[in-house]
Amino acid sequence: MTVRVRFAPSPTGLLHIGGARTALFNFLFARHHGGQFLLRIEDTDRERSTAAATQVILEGLQWLGLTHDEQTVFQSQRAGRHAEVARAMVAAGTAYHCYLSADELKAIREAAAAEGRVEKFRSPWRDRDPAEAPAGVAPAIRLRAPREGETVIDDLVQGTVRVGNVELDDMIILRSDGTPTYQHAVVVDDHDMAITHVIRGDDHLTNAFRQAQIYDAMGWERPRFAHIPLIHGEDGKKLSKRHGAVSVLEFEEQGYLPEAICNYLLRLGWAHGDVELLDRDEAVRLFDLDGVGRGAARMDYAKLGFVNAHWQKQRDDGWLAQEVARRLAGRPNLALGTEAIHRMQALMPALKERARTLVELADSAAFLAHSLPLPFTPKAEVLLTAEARLLLREVGVALAACDFTVPGIDAALRGFAEAKGVKLGQVAQPLRAALTGSTVSPGIDAVLAALGRDEALARIQAAST
Image (cartoon, rainbow, N blue to C red; front, side):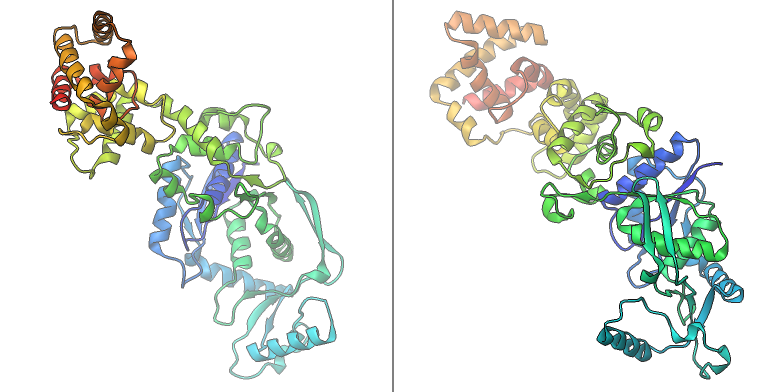
């Protein structure tokens, strides 16, 4: 058997982090077993589905590197096939035409509630002669659900789950206007796409019972189901905006790398011993459904920051410099040309040791592109006393004469401090303020080397006058 799985989002909004994890688990399961990962856009909600939302989903998957096999299937283009299967079920006796009006249906349900009856709805047209159908009324098609026994799902994550058939009603599979319902369309599409495993959130577990009955009614082999727990916020409640970013592209905007998001999401509800940091190849090698837990996972943004910092350090310094420049574009008084990018790349090994995200990295690197005069933080202003400005003029002379490399700069600064009879920090701190406008930066020798002799001396002179 060739494993075939699918990710089937509805284009009614953004690609949320929970959906991204579902896509990742499907992708890794397919690649681990040498199978196919397919994409289906479930766009049958005509009022809410938009082309823009579809594009956002596609962009999010592309950013995460979750490339699907074969062509994307759009559910809305398959309405004819969905209707064909529903009519075949009527012909086979596993579904029936229902001529109830909305008002009649409401009255039946209200009467059942008033009498305290708990069984699920069964239309009177289930066993009624179709010859009695009212003229000019277009019928819906309902599943003739079994009344006795149980529907059982052997779930690959949740274990064996069952429901009494008395709890399941004769659901509509084709509306009176000829459009399919979600439950029916999903089954037909999964069957026609030869899906072998349905891996999705456990909020769909109740749907599995209904969908299993449609498979059984058509005599089709069911796929194996695997319902993975949802992602909650750190407070244990359903993940929402109040917990932080929830959509994939929000995380991109906030400076997270796709490899970090995938690594973090993989470990959010799945485990392989104590392994924490995995690249794509290792994830494909190790992933299987037996490592998925049954409990809800909790989003931990501090842990995500740690994971992102790790993968950020693995990125090429040249790429990081270009990305930082892109993120800084539009900020005032920054000259983001080749020279600034060269400075950023030169200082990147030190800058990325301190940053958890690309946003933090861009903030810390912005001073390298700033034109004179530099803006100073309040703490930096405090350091630039009259005495410090005099010291800066003197250290500028010493630096002008030194070998402008990290070792040469370090030697010059140490020699200057020794000659002045002061500690190196008493020189470095006002110098850092003069060069960066801040009191926080990588090592001052590395900052000077990255700026280059001319720019460094210009900044020292500007701050010392």
